[in-house]
Length: 278
Image (tube, rainbow, N blue to C red):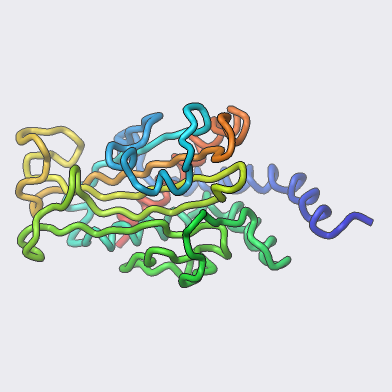
């Protein structure tokens, strides 16, 4: 008789494609964004400018081998009317909840839950020198809609953790200017383990735009898109990196990353949908 974990994995390998197809059809039927809005999403095979200098990259990929990682990013512009009076933290918190709590994440959430039945994560998260004694959030439904989880929070049964989070000042709102080069607010969620063959990070960030930006990503004046922030919208970024921290090769075959691009696009739309939802 096969061990229970092996039997579970065998069952999952047979059931997951059918379940995924059903979920995908349901997801597309309940399309989270209009076609016109979806067309404004810009994708890139590189990280966002601020993500590429994040200190967290040294945590997940300490050796930085030249051919051991795959990167991508997505960007959408949300107008002032779309974000209403939401703060950076509220935008990021809602996006995080939609990302992990939307339709497209449900199969992965289901697998995570099954592994929890056996008292273990699907892919245990952990990084050298990073404490694992932070607050634990077991379900996406436990994520707050107005407040980000703190740095060090372990998410979804030990499969993800918050590596860093920072909220930037907004001038007159709190008496401080923007901090740092290309400043903005962000939260970074790590996964995998730098002591094994797979690790990575999702970075979600908000950059405030000025009155000189038309809300569709077209600049009509100004250079940095930050002056007069109160009247502008935001850039909402999602950057992702997956790597093999131990060797100079990718952690998975290239076709897996082809699927990831589609999957990440759907996750991004789910996150944006939650930001736009009243």
